[in-house]
Length: 205
Image (tube, rainbow, N blue to C red):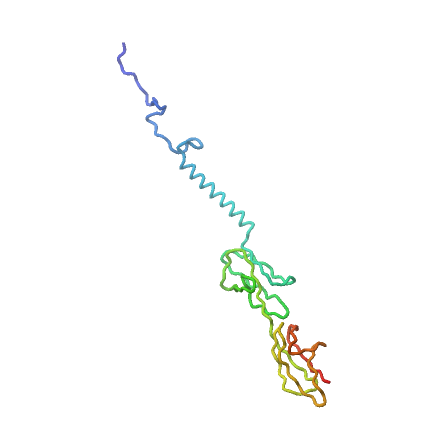
């Protein structure tokens, strides 16, 4: 009868099937193991970063900046839109022409609410539209006395508004019948429709 103790090897497994001399591995078992939660989280973060980088690259390829459009308030007069990078200023466009009006500036909101855009200081942060703010133009009206006499200096009128009081010249042997411009009789109540300086001519009878 052999009373010698039975030999065991370092490779002998415990009751749970694990070698007592082998440390448990928490990472990198196959693709993923039940204990690999930290690796799963890390890989997910890396995947999200790659996806975000791809989306930003695609967005940058198709969007070279924010779009600033201009509304002149006239169907037949347009101003080209501009592509502006975030944080940059908008180049002030060439002033469009509108007969009888002067451009007072560009507003972030349409009239009657006016919020002027400062081309030198305001920065672009998103797409938006600038609206032209127009004011009626003022100009001189001169007088041709057509043989009459009087102290009739030029007056200033405003487009779209009445002429206002007009001078009454004198001419010996004639009666003053009013003022005309291009065949049209002009009185104090006549609304100014000319778009610049012009000359009124005296009519005598």
